[in-house]
Amino acid sequence: MNIIFTNRREAGCLLGDKLGSLELPGEPLVLGLPRGGVPVAFEIALALNAPLDVFTVRKLGVPGQAELAMGAIATGGIRVLNMEIVNALRIPADVIDAVGDREEVELRRREWYYRQDHPVPVLKNRFVILTDDGIATGSTMLAAIRAMKAANVARVLVAAPVAARSTVAKLRKAADDVVVLSTPEPFNGVGQWYQDFSQTTDDEVRELLRVAHERELAPM
Image (tube, rainbow, N blue to C red; front, top):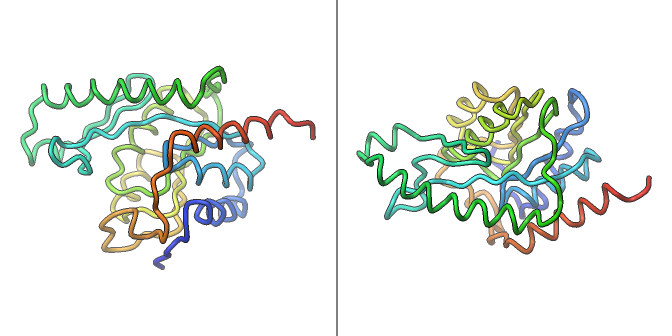
């Protein structure tokens, strides 16, 4: 079934309802991939009464075709390459390294801005839900999954409102579980499955994290 979501908030609410109907293995830590994954993750965290945080991943765009991902990097020095794209376009290693270095700078900037003085969550032995607003090639999410495995999480579940069907098959091999509401074909791009796909800003991400952290600290 193909679904057109009104916006990321509605998509997150629907995804939260779906996850809430499942028997999840313990209390999850919901991690949103910035920027667009954080509003979705915020609604999931509300639905599950779970803590929310951010996990920074940066796509490595092909020079001159920035929307085409040749890979991704994630916190912890993780780098995942889409070798089909790299080989097909014959992208040299020095070009990949140059793009990676540039994106590493942006990754560190975002981490500092989003988190400020809030401590990095402990991931070891946690059940983690990795969330994005949609998944096309999967390079970004695969980098995040690989980083979770390196951090020795107990279990990682990938959650997204919409994803390419072929990508979901790849993610199922990497993650412990995958929950996606819609897998339309042809996929073409995440934005076409939202009525409002306006860019999420850094300030919006920071504000959502602030609200979530204050909720976690509030007395029950």
